[in-house]
Image (cartoon, rainbow, N blue to C red; front, side):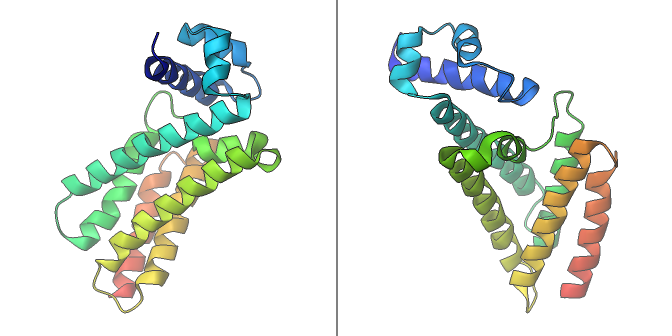
Length: 187
């Protein structure tokens, strides 16, 4: 098996297992067995569980942000509609059968404080998502795009947390309603 194929298989297995069961609950051998990769090949690619978790998070980041961007792009050119589309996408994500909250916050909560590589992957994802929302806010006709971006980011991140702990089944819709208020105030 080529290195690229082994890496892909390990990352798919890691995401499925770590996201559904938690990082601490899944041993490196569980990931190896699910991927059908030898232990030697696994450690050749990822010298520690920390390296594998960080790589899984980086791969998930690319795919997750790509899904958000595709949904936003489908909303058309209107800057307000594009910002609000983020919350529509969050609602779709929250309704998925396997939704278990934000993988990045989950990873940080489990091991991020003790793992520089995982912490860096989490921070990278959150920075890139914030930057994406900032770009959307800068396209909106306002004198305060940075404040708008900060508010939209907090609403999106808060909706993820509320949806994950299950205290509001309509978290995305409520965050979208609050985003409407922000957009109206920012005009």
